[in-house]
Image (cartoon, rainbow, N blue to C red; front, side, top):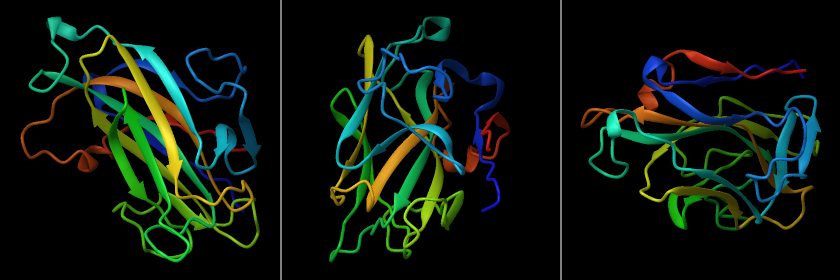
Length: 213
């Protein structure tokens, strides 16, 4: 397969990045609950995974907010989590015979994202199409794989931000349904005007470019 390039779209000059990693170098990342579980594949390069129904947690301190902003609903800023999500092999989305297959995110034990994903058909709850795929990217030749750019806004008043990435409903084998994450970035961003569409801003300029082998 030809090399893939996926850009992490950003929020422009108003975004303030306080954490980022692409997992390319080193393995001692104390902020991650699992900092040795890395995979390398020609179409993905080095990433954190693969996982099935298990999860991995990123823990970082709450950043300082500009202009003495107070975190939480009603503040002038909020937080934005960006990353690439790798959906690998036979994910069945919302289909009930072999699924549903979920990927989700919790922040300080509160679910902020939980959707089904599918590689073999369009039956998934997540409304955006994959940024790359579904195509075969080098794992089980029977199944297709996908790459999604994810941008998930959230907020918390806690001085510590604990972000758990998890799978649910997946088959237990790495050779059947698995996932990984890469190019993780956390930013402080302005709260959008009422009614503004977050997904409509994803094309507002590439700030990080994924290196492909």
